[in-house]
Image (cartoon, rainbow, N blue to C red; front, side, top):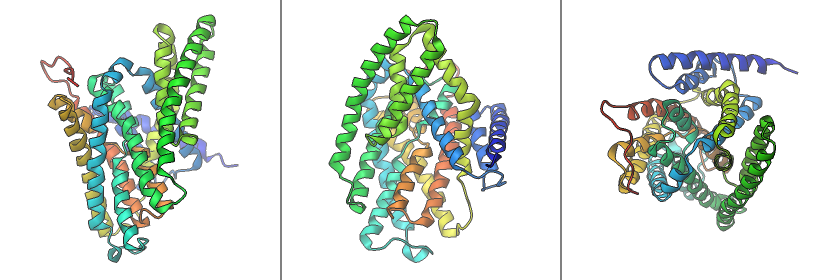
Amino acid sequence: MSYKYLLDLALILLCTKVLGLCSQRFRMPQVVGALVAGLLLGPAVLGIIDETEFLHTTASLGVVVLMFTSGMETNINELKRCGRSAFLIAMAGVLLPLAGGFVVGYYFNDPTLLVNNAAGPEGTLFLQNVFLGIILTATSVSITVETLRELGKLQSTAGSVILAAAIIDDVLGIVALTIVTSFSDRSVHVWIVLLKIVLFFVFAIVAGLAFSRLYRWWTGKTEENRTQHAIVAFVFCLLMSFLAEKVFGVADITGAFVAGLVLANSTTGRRGKYLADKFESVSFLYLSPVFFASIGLQVELEGMNSHIVLFAIVLTIVAILTKILGCGLGARLCRYSREQSVQIGVGMISRGEVALIVATKGEGLGLINTELFGPVIVVVVVTTIVTPVLLKLVFRDRPGATGLPDAAG
């Protein structure tokens, strides 16, 4: 049995903390330093740590806990108020990146310029270009959540909209992914997937109401056993994450976020603060650093010729601009202020693990050329790093500012 994972963990925790403090010194969120730490430790720079199954699993658990705690800290009334606007913003934030990714794929996914061409017939090449657009539609809200929490803006109007829009974005992304994969995999039926998504939200409402009532009754009877309360809450989070992914085909982080919302509605005062403190401690000390570092660990720069490098640069620029313009325009149409619209657009930039999951699925079905997988990872890493930096800039408090104005819709 190898014990190298202990050394890997020690290096990740040390480096993410040191570089996190360095980034904070330059008035940047600590998450930027954590992401850079993964990049430095991984095969792209020093090559000290390779991504292993253990680190991958720990990182997956880290993002689940991160979204769970975000759900517990979310203002439910604010989330309800911005629901309709969030849907329109998410829709705009899906359509524009989808179109942008397709155009980039049309010009760069050229069989004559790729060594390991797997494009196949013309129809398959068309699907590959569409699939590149679908990868760009993904939004990983976990990086944004951590940054907004650090900036004290998680419960702001823009923060609530970003959370709601990102959840809807995931659902729309699943629908788009299902439609495209159904053309390559005849075992995938679009209507069944759509039905499962609807059933998940019905199940989430029923299970959430039942658990909330039972949890409130039980915690009231066992006020002194708060440790047990935290364990039961975590079990509920894990079960909702598992059922969302395995049974209903919805992202596990969506299940975790819904579980957090249920707990937010079930606990108040000192009891709620105790739960939040417990999970934030576990996330801060162990899970979150591994998750952020794991993104950088996946970057490998070998075998990228000039054509692929140019493709990576263009795809990254398109990925950033289409989210800012798409979500920002959607926010303006919903009568949010110009400042809020920019904040919402920037908050939706990060692709993170969601895009990687989508890309991996597409690679298995032949919907993405193997040579183009590297640039997709570059897009994920760059958008993940620039998101907290840009969020810091757009959420900067200006002299005389009185906070975020309320949106009309």
